[in-house]
Image 1: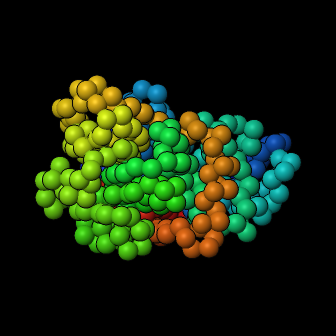
Image 2 (image 1 turned 60 degrees about the horizontal axis):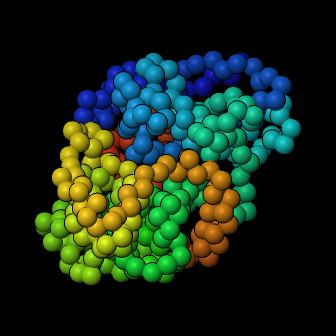
Length: 341
């Protein structure tokens, strides 16, 4: 008999994420059947999108809301196989799968998870350390790469603004775009994050969006206007981007974190998408799983030789997961947020 420690949602947050909305429980796992493996999880992801699932119903078309008082599935996680009855998945292999925020999981390699992105997969630790597969070589890297891909910004010229640029996705977007030849301007919510974006990420310009009127700050770093915008924030940020976009500009709609814990705001100037002939392209990284191998082939050498700057906000122990999510939503983390179990 194998026991797993797992987080459950006991109450949907109304506003900010708090620890009492979760419960850490013990559950007995089933025996490992033919074709299945037992994984001891070592790292588990913390992502803004989890907040969308902490509701009675998630947005239409998105991953389902977390059911109350049941283990939280659909969270990318890295671990080590301890028992295996599945060909091609030997004991001791490092893998990823979708049964996160728990200590152990029995996984069926034949079951597609998260649109195929998080199906059981053996990871190449010669290419990168295990936790990198939760960041630049995993879902975060795929989201960054796919978001630029869908607006044809990977091979071209122009100016790109990235909001929430010090986050796991935003910081990768900035660097992929720079390596692709774009001029990149970035915004974040603290001076420390802005300094990191300038000095380590290497963006062309960066600003603290809290330090002054957003449209004025954006105009100061992009007086010629924007050709592309990668939106992680929504609300007033998207509104400012629409104002600054050049004719025929393209917007990648990745996230709307400003709306995740409060009532949605704006944009009030959406007609600019019509008058400026703009393209607003919503996307989800997991919907572009066929790009995963291409993304890894492109980013892995940059990561290995140090060209790709990458920061992690690591929380120790499974018990820290709700606090990590709360800190990330409040903007207190930098780069990829994850739990070392």
